[in-house]
Every structure is written in C-alpha cells, then in structure tokens.
Length: 545
Image 1 (cartoon, rainbow, N blue to C red):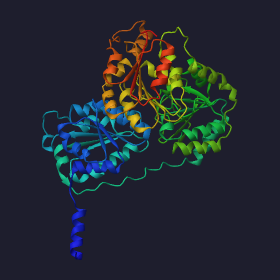
Image 2 (cartoon, rainbow, N blue to C red):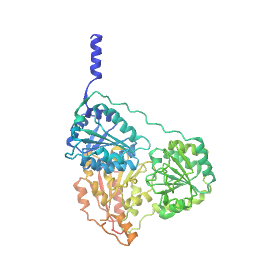
Image 3 (spheres, rainbow, N blue to C red):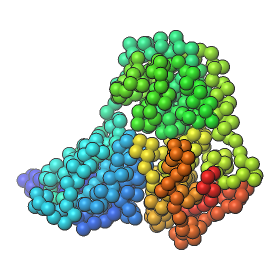
Image 4 (cartoon, rainbow, N blue to C red):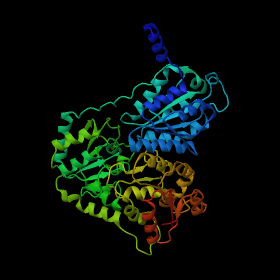
C-alpha cells in the first residue's frame, strides 16, 4: 500500500461514523457504566438497540421511579454515578422523584430521557413536555443533546458534575431524530476527579483553639463523612482526641457503634443522646448537610460553639452559624485537626452515661410475650447480619426506629433516604445494592412503601438477585398516624388494607416467612439473610405497637 493509500485509510478510520445513540452508549462505556436501569419507549429505540450491542447491561424495570432509586442507591454505595433511563412525557416525570432524592441525598446519578423529534419541540404534541425545565429545580445540570456534535461533551459533563463533590443528579434529554443521526465524535476520556483543597492552616489552628477550650466538645458526623470515605480518618481523630461522636441518620456507620466514643444517632438512646448533645458546649460538624437534620433541634439557644468541616461553606442559618469553617477535603481536614488538637475532649466522663444508655436502648431485647415491633426486631436483625452487610431502610416509622437504634460497624452499610425522604426506595434500592456490593443486603420497609415499588421484586428475580426484604405490616401509614395522634389525640386518613403478603411473595417466587413469635422471627432472619435466595420476611405488627 502506498503512503497516500495508508493516509487515506487512516483518515477513513478516523472519521468513521456512528449514530448519536451508539456514540452516547460508547461514552457510557468509557465512563465505566455497567448497568442502565429503565423502561423502554418508542423514542428510545435507537438508544436501546445501541445498549444491546454494547458492554452496558440494560435492566428493564417495572416503574421509572424504581429505575431512578436503583441509580440513586448505586451512586450512594459506589461513588460512581448510577444511570437511569425513561422515555418522554410520563416516563420522564416518573423518574423525577428518584432523581430528586439523589439530588437532596447527594448521590451521583445521571438520568437519560428520550424526546420526540426536534421539529415537534416548538408546538403542542403527543406526550410533549419541556422536560429540561421540569428537571431543572432538582438537578445540578441538564441539557438537551440537540446537535450530534455535542454528545460526547454532554455525557462527560453530566458525569463530571454528578460525581463532583458535593455529588448529585444530572440529566440529558435525547430527541429521537438526533439519536438516529450520525456523527464522527469520539467519547472523551474519563478524567481523575477534581482534588479538593487541603485545609488551610489558619482555620485548623483556630478550630483547635475552640476545641481545646471547650469543656464538652462533640463531633456531629453527617452524610459527607461517609460519602467522602473519611470514616477511617474520623475514627483516628476520635482515638487521638477522645471526643464523642453523634451521627445524623445518613452519617450512620461513620464511626463504629462498638467504639466507646459512639453515641449513636441524634435523638437515639431514649433521650440519652439528645441530652448529651444538649450538654455539649462545642460541636464539630463534619460533612453535615442541613437537609439531614434541622440544627435548631440541637442548637436551639444558639449558644454552642459550632465548627464546620466540609467540602463547601456552611449554609446561612440562624441556628448554624459556625465560628470557624474549614472548607477542604473532609478526610484531610480531619487528619489536620487530629494533629492540631490532640486530647481536647475535656472530661471524658461527661458522656459515658449517655453512651451506656444509648447502647442499652439499642441492644434491649423484647420479652417473649411482647407483641412484634420494629424496635424489638432490631437486635434480631443485627444478629443475623454481618458487620459488612448493607441495610436499606424505606421511609416511615420503621425508618426512625432503625436509624436511631440499629447499630452499625462498617462504613457505608446503612442507606436511608433523608433529604427528600421518599417512600418506595427500599426494594429497588436493594436491587442496585445487590448488584453493587458483595455483602448481603437487607431491605427494611413498611407496608405503605413496599407496595409503591414492590413490583421490582420481579426485576430482582429476573436478575438473579439474592437479598432479604423485611416487611413490617401494620395496615397503617404509621409515622403520620403517630404525628397526628401526638398533635390531636387521634389520626385520620392513614389506615390502609393489604393483600396477603405471604401469597404475594410466593407468587414472585420468593422464599417467604411469616413468623408468629420472636423465636420464629430470629430463625427466619438467621436463615434468610445469609442465603443467596431472594426472600421476604413478613412481620405483622399491631397497629398501635
């Protein structure tokens, strides 16, 4: 072959054309995406067949909300953006709740939606909504791939922003005519994530002085501690300083509850933890987002010395007005503080009683003749789960109990929706968790949340997943009943009826248990949780338990 022929062949190879759909999927491959969770749609045809011919597995689900929750939990557990897919109109709006959940819980997620042809966008037509405008309030960034030449840049930007601290959701809309058009654009390389700055020495020194002068300093560990993989640094900081730690619900597992410095979570321990927080005169908030827990509840008089360590400056809030803000990589910030403020815990005995009471409350076992309750289930569930197993809790009264009293040991082993606090996350979340981590997975849910996305058990069975669903059934939207009763002495609009959950579980092909006493429950959990089978444990709880 002559040199001219070789150059011509190289040029032909360099300008090889693909459809935009094929290029987008090649970009997903470049980003390391293994699964796309979603529902098919007419406007997605080119994208679906491009996925079929790729190394990315498309997982058809039963509802787009389930797809978004799967992507959400994947992002929470791995730090890599989960990907969900829906068509235009109702497909896109069905994704919205799970996308918003990821945004408020700081989970990296990329949502993809189809759209009609560009020639339809300017006028009213079937299923046509301005989806980017609908998504705009609940994502970090979104755009329409309106030109074949921008597909690679758009995908790279969506992943970069979704995964950048603080992570969240992004969205790409793909019109069907653009998806079918051709381009020579190549995927952009995946780059190392932006490195957050080291803490500045002056802020660290000022924080160390505040901690050293405090009589009863305490660490408040939030979502960002776990998300930033700073749990080990927190544990070393606590060992160096002797300071106790209380966690937000999303910060659970930042410190092992077996550590003598752990006071479990805010409002746990039958009031003992809240009392300790009330007594603390200085609070070091690490990776704390106000959306997790209102600071007015733990700083009502605005009299505590508050220090802020996070990747972004603190939100402006009357009850959260830090004296010092260390804006840096959370892990390196903790390491710097550990060196600057050793042994600053004051009298360590000030929280010992609270620690003892909190652990006693969390490990208290029910009496043999006690009715079933979520609280009584906690020690049996903890016994059945290994330290590295992952518990995903849905939203409801059971979430509050598990968040307060379920002890955790290893980082990132407790998943809860707490920013948006959306019901229906547990079952689809368990599907994603089972695909993402080697440990056993348990989904804890109430009957209300279960029936919102319980159909994803079919998805789980089709994928060969093996996890356990613990279903607390009290025929009630219990958390709302509790709040109404507290306010008015009665409840209204909260009672519900349910199907036979045992038969429902069996119809999905699950190993199903319906224990009748505490020994039966313990045996069911001990058998189901370590098993590779998909299982359902139905725990019937009296409505007022």
